[in-house]
Length: 387
Image 1 (cartoon, helix red, strand yellow):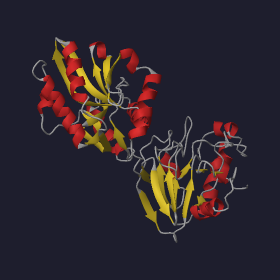
Image 2 (cartoon, rainbow, N blue to C red):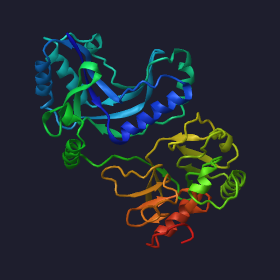
Image 3 (tube, rainbow, N blue to C red):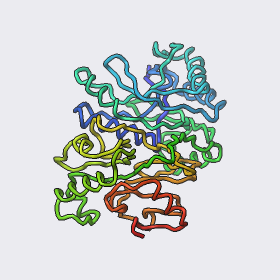
């Protein structure tokens, strides 16, 4: 009999976020980099001699479903063997799994886990070579916030021989896709187009901050990073001068205030730990990890990407890279782009409702939300804080 696995595979932003975390753990803790595509197992491993019937029965079940939602909910473990992202399934996702098991059990040999009424929906992050490093990895994950987003099952994937995609049932297009179609970007674009016509706008929670509290934002300081001076034309003659100026500017602006830092605090070969720099910086720091912030962080409150705050009459979505969630048309405060594309990502872009607080655009100094709002209210776009 042949071995198969039925699963949902992540795509887009969620896939990238989980892959980034997996790769960071591999680098930091020297565990295997064996490729595990971010996914949720639905049934299996299972064995059958009737591949044609397997695909047919999966299709017969899946065609009765449309929008199947679930949420990501932090991390958990199976003993000291596996660390995973917790999944909060919708009732539809729970029922889909049960329906698949019921249809397949007469002619398939299923896993013992498939019959578990308390089935744990999860997305594995790491599972090999971790027993001796388990506690350290767990400690690291306490300072890593998985994005708080609601996701949708778009396709049900059947994995066959050699761990390759055999086929997929596309819940949007309502048909079975062969391996070639499953991997075709144009076919997937059609899936997304149909999905966007059906889906609800992204639900975003906003933390309300008293408008009498002075709050600052900043991104991409890149402490210890010599190449950033050349790359973004920073007005410093050395890393030593840049580091000193960044710390001095921060502490002159920020006293006991709240600061949201939007990623990439330090970078470069031989850089010092993020906590080294956080210890030198004033204020109550809330850190949203950028793609280079891979340390254990103890000297700041780590917040997830896509973090919403409400300040006065304004709502702002904080993120490192400005990837606008579906259906959200409000203001985004971001970093990542530095001063590389000032036409699309200036300091304030009134048309796109984006605010780029990369250090180069805000004079290498945390900027207050109060000042940002004053500039927004002029109705003008600004390349930098200077105009």
